Each structure stands twice: as structure tokens, then as C-alpha cells.
Length: 66
Image (cartoon, rainbow, N blue to C red; front, side):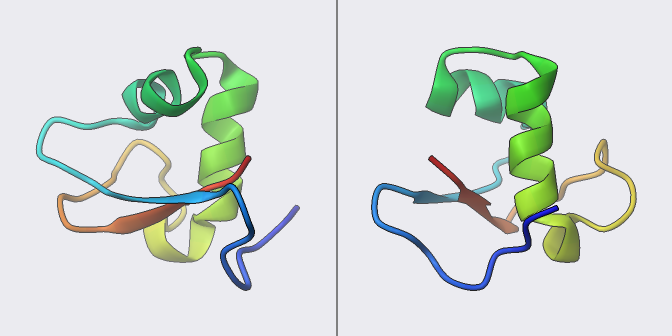
């Protein structure tokens, strides 16, 4: 498991908007809603999101890895 320690070249930061979920964010950045893309975002942001990956809040800033 990788935890974000800093933003790497090519990575993005996304601010969660009302109505967002990790599947839609994965679709926006990776062009896919695959489980591996959703988990890539989740595992990179566990400290921000918390234990429930289905509960993200508007205003949270998520690291989107390459």
C-alpha cells in the first residue's frame, strides 16, 4: 500500500465536488471506472478519506496518482 508523501510529477490534485464518487473521479482522470483505478485513488488518499471509501466529502483534496 502506498500512502501519499508528496505530489509527484504528472500527478494531479482534485477537490471533491458535491455528487462525486471515486468511480466518477477515476473515469475523469483515467477514462475508466475499473476497480483497480478506483482503489489506486482510494489507497493514495486513505488518510483523507478514512476507512469508508464510499464516503467522500465536498472540499476534500485528493491526490490522483499517475
